[in-house]
Amino acid sequence: MRPARALIDLQALRHNYQLARELSGARALAVVKADAYGHGAVRCAKALQRDADGFAVACIEEALQLREAGISGPILLLEGFFEAVELALIDRHDLWCVVHAQWQIEAIEQAKLARPLTLWLKLDSGMHRVGFHPADYQAAYQRLLASGKVAKIVLMSHFARADELDSPRSEQQLAVFQEARQGLAAEVSLRNSPALLGWPAIPSDWVRPGIMLYGATPFEQPHEAASRLQPVMTLESRVISVRDLPAGEPVGYGARFISERPTRVGVVAMGYADGYPRHAPTGTPVLVDGQASRIIGRVSMDMLTVDLSDVPGASLGSRVEFWGRNVLASDIAAAAETIPYQLFCNVRRVPLIYSDD
Ligand SMILES: *Cc1c(COP(=O)(O)O)cnc(C)c1O
Image (tube, rainbow, N blue to C red; front, side, top):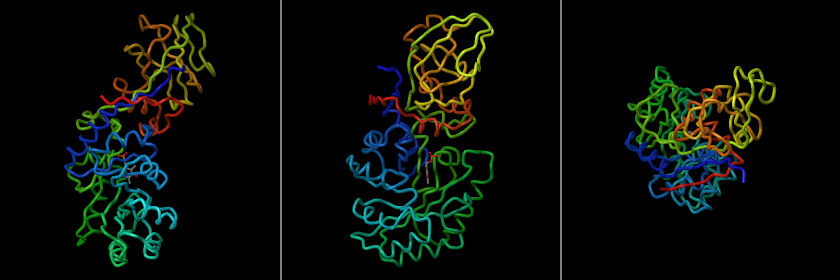
């Protein structure tokens, strides 16, 4: 069997969830959209089910997958519904729903529902993606209340630059939010992972941790609270071929690496079709049998090459860690000019192997 695989540590996932709660002092919706950032939404939600105040997903398809797997707690649709017909399913499966646009309010007014809805009313406080304009926010709130279709409204907004700890933008967005919600006595949800970890003074009755649940820091710089996270996914494989090259020989597509000295090359069963980033350059760190090494040459679809010259004892079958407990996904993301979110979401083809102790 091909040795590439992703180990998923559910104990670490629970640790990170509890840390989100502890740091925020708030109730926390575990964000498991996009198949739990590549970690497997059903297995992750089941592992968190006993502890979690609820879950958040991007769309009804993802919510129904959780309901079908027996997840019975609150599930929030972070973008609400895309078409009015989804309201029947939202009603039947008792889902919570973001409302970010006027047409959604009109659809709710016209819907025939068995029970009142829990809605999260989204303000555009400056990210300018979705949400109500501050000038329209109070009217949207009042109109939803007046619809008679609503059990509860949570006030929410989302930060564009919470990962930049020296940026004034998050506080500016908070000020816009506070101004827009004046006089509305309702619960508030503002903080995603970077806001939760990096902006402790920003209020939130509900937090929405995503990336931190999976143990990766959203920050580019070292950060005390983020250093308490435990990596959940370990992406690993094994050396499937070894060869010794003299100086001056090329390795892989495009001869992007040419040996400067006699080099022992290990070929590893891992490629961009598994989600390892093709843009990881020569020098990107890996761990071979627990020892530091580096990628050399281009990452190809099913294989990549590592430098075994300074890894004594490495041979056919040596274990290679690409990210996980020892190699931080955020470091690999930085080397490949992306973010850990995308590394995790891209993982495919490899089996996900779960452990829970
Ligand atoms: C994805 C998402 C989150 C989670 O963000 P992280 O940075 O992964 O913590 C929170 N809120 C909303 C609205 C989202 O879309």
